[in-house]
Length: 239
Picture (cartoon, rainbow, N blue to C red):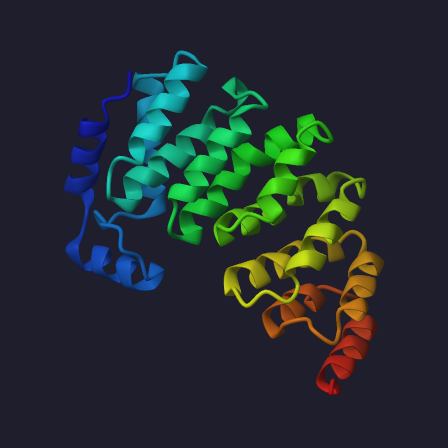
């Protein structure tokens, strides 16, 4: 089994007080920081996977959850990346487990990486897990609402079967004041625009009176130039 005390000790040895202060400021987080980079965390995970591979699903979930007993960002990130690295051990019911981790997160830098293991389950299990995603999209926790959007990105790249689901979620959140939700809507639209620009064009036009600046800027970034110019003109001429 992975010795988390040893993992933390190694991270502390590699850490930098100056980097820790900078990371804390950048993420505007109340968490503690060892002051190591994400590649160093990944290298630590790779070493543990080589020396102490996870045996089964129960060990995976227990170890990942234990990482959130630490107040250090890097240990929580280690738990998130551990889930992602061992995604083949996870089952559809683990979406609820991942949702509980999201609730424990206080920064996008932990929430967003959790979309990796979650999106794999979503791709494999939709529409059976649709009711779970529906509940996330209206959850009081804004990180979980954001999560309901970004976990759809992998599915949307592969087909447009879940586009109506995304539109339903985004319609319900389009007037939200929370920056991270607005940003997530824009990110998904930006991603889809590379494959199905007409979908994004229609969505933006329909919401032109209320779409936020951050959502709009992300959504139109990769649209064809003519469409992008027309939408920017319409956005700038809003009453």
